[in-house]
Length: 214
Image (cartoon, rainbow, N blue to C red; front, side):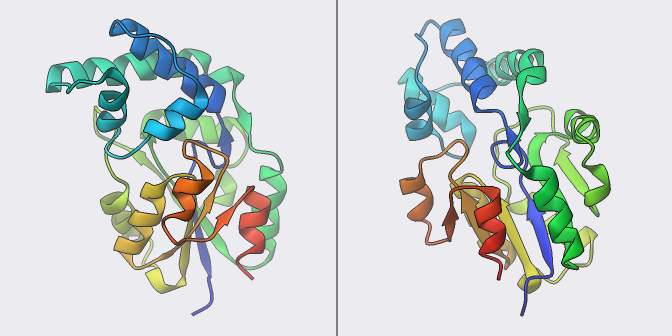
């Protein structure tokens, strides 16, 4: 079946926020008695569930109370710096061209829904998407798999005609679990080597990712 619908990831895919992600991550590590790390070090540690990523750097397990503290520290700092982030190069043009091709598009993020929707709107992108879903839980960091299934079901989409474009291994795993295809972009939280290990196509930009659709 031809791809008729694209599900976009947000952070690290359509939103270029690597710098503020690293600043927020380092807020956590310093707050827990550690030292700041580099972006490549974070890419090497990044996994889902997110809690494991922090445990790798801190070299110890986190209990539920500590994980809630980590999540709050991270998001408080991230939100404070959000105005410094920008859309990935060419986002408006890519979304417009996809719409003109006759394909529909939606947005699924594991960022909090009540922060996601106004941010997407501020960037002037809301009209491109048939549906926008973010995280509704109080603490984040989990897999996207169940969220993707619900996202597709809510739109009555056949997964066989859907591709998810994201920047982490969890995006590929979520798509596979839902019966959809995936294309990964090496612009976000994980190294290209880690992305290629999934077997999904890997692109260097969202423009290249969309070219792979044909």
